[in-house]
Image (tube, rainbow, N blue to C red; front, side):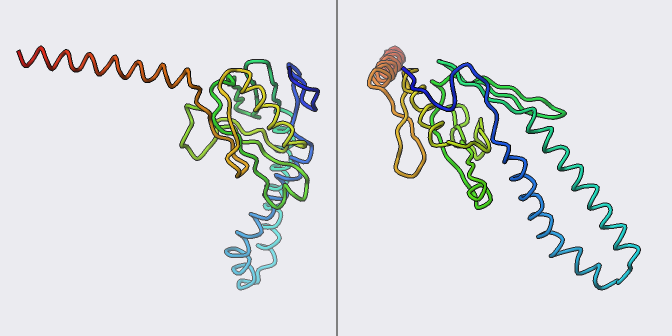
Length: 205
């Protein structure tokens, strides 16, 4: 039984509107850092007013296009939780959709940088069995308010699916292997060893 939450099952939900501000602030900080280390010193040295105005106009166009793209990106995003799987979609020009069964989920990580902390949002990174060991998670539920609640809900659904996860004390969740699964694996290994032994005995005769 799933308790009442801000994320009801079979109902699409979107990131917080603060995602737009988060992307814009991060983009602005990155651009300022790059320009401060590269182009700003050059502009100060050449002291060409016309070139400086042209450069700033181009920069304004790029910034305006980025803001427009971020708003479209936000509108395209949605996530949806079901009893046995989660679904998601995003993308402006290239749409990406996905369906992930809960029994494939191995890790749930909450991430929050300085800007996200200021905006009171977090990103829930979801790692699955096929993506284990990779730097990029299979799913990122970005710019979520009540992120702790969402993680607990997903963890509950994962446990109900039959493959529980547990916290390791670092904000990361790790898989729990059931005793039934371990027994099944041991039996398969024993069967393979018997086959190898049989082949070796036949060759030695």
